[in-house]
View 1 (cartoon, rainbow, N blue to C red):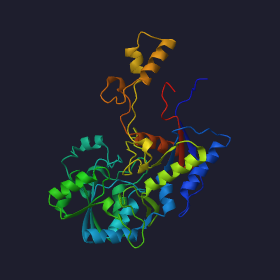
View 2 (cartoon, rainbow, N blue to C red):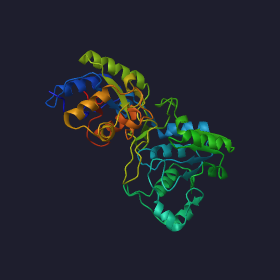
View 3 (tube, rainbow, N blue to C red):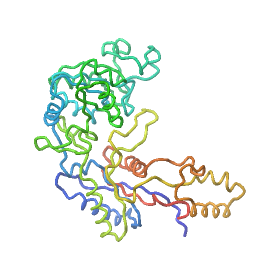
View 4 (cartoon, rainbow, N blue to C red):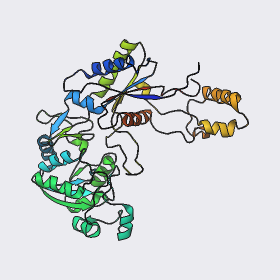
Length: 397
């Protein structure tokens, strides 16, 4: 009988992961147990096991304290007046990092991008900027000017006034603070030549602009805790990027040694099932909320590691394009047969070919990671493992 179901994404429950546990074994045991449950399934070639980065880091014990962050900031940026520029507005992602950064300085010049941060959290909306005649590409606002124009503005989802929130964090850490709003990185050089760039995806460009403009010391978040400080966790590639709040005084860092982990899980799944199963670690998905305008990707990458079969982009044709153009004269079984034959014989590389227009031009790991993030969520579903079947199927399978 013809298979009538395409891609299936299942959240798989697992125990609460603690430091030092054999996560690879827990993952394999959990997926195999799920296959034998009342909601069970049979394993197939090129199924995908996906594990959230959070439990990988938890099992590794990859944590750091605000004191350890502060020590590294002092060592790398001098401990005096530091410009902290373009951070995202997040209680989970940045507040504890900011506490540690402020602990490593006497004064913080906090420069926020506006009307929103890099991932779409808004301080103010564009309509109000227009109403007040503010040009965010050229105008620099002091905190006093911002308040004069806009007053207190609460984030619509969190109810937080992030300017007040970040000011209080810095002051409670024992540092002076001055807050500026600007979208030009070079603005910070009017206040200090020692800068910590806290943007995520644009950090290399920001660092280059500041260096070219004469900044004395410029670090990015991946320069902080890229090695252990007093026994802390660390990430040699991403430092503080991808970290999350663990407690009021600790962060969980992005996991490390990820390729070793995914390769081990793949080997164990092969032994347990006899099938070649793809494996990846996923963090944030790469999608944007149309209402809140938040781009989800606050991690430096969607997937820090994956097996080789997940490399590359989809190579798909658009079924409705074929039906409306190449085979507009056909219908029923003849149409199905013609489209199936076209798919079976499609080119190995459809880039630039009109028949692929409207398909998603993104990397497989970004697409799959987004599917995983939506499946597992970020709350209390209790499914840190996502098992995907049929992802590489098409109309002919």
